[in-house]
Length: 311
Image (cartoon, rainbow, N blue to C red):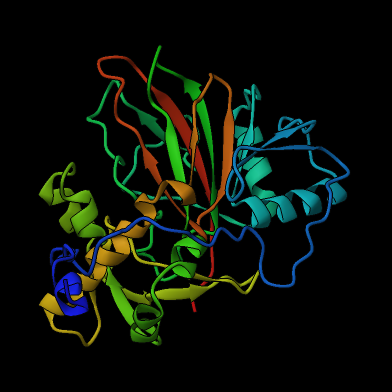
């Protein structure tokens, strides 16, 4: 048999392809800290990581008591490094929850949400209203200055389900293909509260607030003001289009970017117990409230810290 015949008789791999805009398997860069940032120990409380990238339980801090300046400073570093902090069994009252959040700035309210006993505390009572927030999103990006962060206290938990998940949007950006990063350089997107709230809010209530909350523009990729890290800043609830792109091109890119929060390597999932508190960096994360506990009751109260203008 000739060499040519032998080569020609070998089986050939059939033609194959995958859609270009999907998520595909392979190594992913999981970088918790900003480049050049040292991984320093914590000395004033215990930190138990829930994964290599995002989420840590904090032990030895009582949220019902004022923080010392040193503890506040170290908690701030932990927040920047882990993006979401969990405190077990705290049971703070509304005044204590607000006092803790005020260590990071002025508080803001969202008039589209129900209030608790305190007007600065939003209440999510899922026995009295249909469940929502079970989509990946960043809070109030429809504001010119979206919230810096939020403090969520679970007052009542169902017998099963009702977890919350967070995703690290710096990791989501880090792992984009280079050609996508180049395409997004300088891009801005429109954020609007109407699409996110229209699914569960009467139209007349939306009309009453649309002048107060007109559509705003933010960078598609924002820079964290404290760490300098670049992060995806678009989300399914509020981002409607990329400025200057035709709608089909914008929709295709946003679908790709929305998918990035769905990667498990970028996520942490927290199972609540009554009295637990979570504090997250709203600039750096998206979150998802898992809706799998009907017909049981789940009651949470949230305080939001006012933020700055994304750049």
